[in-house]
Image (cartoon, rainbow, N blue to C red):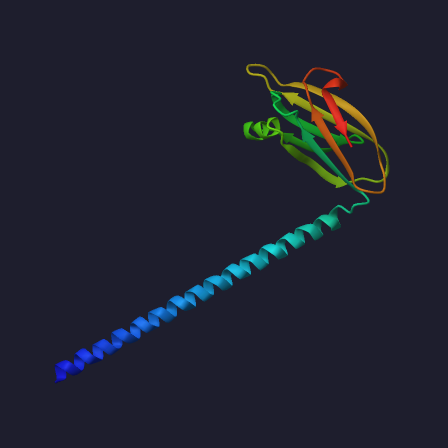
Length: 172
C-alpha cells in the first residue's frame, strides 16, 4: 500500500512538472514576443533620431550633398578622391576594390554632406588612378557653383583619367 501511495505521489509530481513545463514554455514565448516588440520599437525610435539629427546638423537651407559615380561598366582604376570647397578640404576617400567594383557596377556614393552659406563657391575635385606597378596618377578640376536657399546636390561623374575637364562631369 505504501508502494502504491509512493507511485501515485510520483505520478502526481510528474504531472505537475509537465504542466509547469508547459507554463514555462508559454511564458518564454510571451517574453520572446515582448523582446521582439521592444526591438522593433527601438529601431523605429533610432530611425526617428537619425532623421532629427540630420535636420538639426544639416538644415535644408544650408545643406550641400556631394555624390560620386562612374559610368556603368567603366574600368577606371580609381584610387582616391579629395573634395575641397572654397579651398577647404571637406572629404577624402581611398577606395577599396569592393567599393570600386560597386561604383563600376553603377553605384553612387555620397562622399560629403555639410553646410555652406548661400552664394558663389568654388568646388575642387582631385582624383587618382592606381595602375599596377606605377605610382598613382593625380588629376584635378575646379567647378564654380552657386548655392541658393535650399539643399544643393552635386554629383561628380568621373568618366576618364586623362587631363582636362572632359573627363569629369558635374550634375546639379
